[in-house]
Length: 362
Ligand code: PMP
Image (cartoon, rainbow, N blue to C red):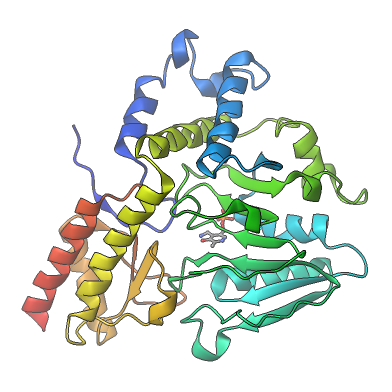
């Protein structure tokens, strides 16, 4: 077997080895059809079975809550930044956003192109090193929805609790933490995520929404941008990204095999804790810039005392087989993305390396 890297990429990111091997085994001849899943009609029974299985697995992992539907779309989470207000922000209403960092910023900018948008809370004052406090949040009756970015992939912050929005739909961009921990789907009107972190390869975007919210879209928006086009066609209005959906189904199967989401969350917390402890116990050699109560269990960001040392850390870590530890170019520093498929052993190897690096350079 070929050697697998210690993969800390932010996305596309590590996939479970078991899933890759299963996909490899059925790559050329998919379940006796004599062709790969990429070579068959998306209207055929074989593909449709996979497609429907992916939807039911996803809903079942989220607790089989009644009234929710899954859409498999394209264009990435970035397209959802626009599609969401196009569908849900009607005339006379205002779209409410929490500004928590780089991805929230992109979502807000797109919403502003569509209609009236307001920022109801922001952590800009502390450079987005925390999730804004939303405990006393007041939303106007005219609010079409409140949008939050569940996990800021670049800064490394994550909601620990979601706000209670009463009758106003809560919408969450969960691109970088979907299915990494238990959530109560009932709290949300709609969640969306690009698949390429916790769910599979890039190419498919998942929308999970209360059916009543997406069953009627304004008539003046293009067909492909309307949620109800995809809802009423079981996400088969046009050709779906068949291979990506198949891979998502396999990842969902793998998640199911790990036991419950609660169990997976426990492992994810243990992985993150190991790295955060190494940072916190380093006597200032490593520094976690994110406020303790907002730390992400998916993207652990940290700094060294100067940029030279950070460069050296990245170089030496790469030589030891650790990939993807360089922080996002917009913020610098270091980042370990530890999505579901990154094993505890990779995190342990990373902290061993961190201790070793500190010993040689501290
Ligand atoms: N939202 C978040 C939180 C993300 O991390 C990303 C991708 N890194 C996006 C949105 C954009 O996703 P995509 O590249 O699928 O458009």
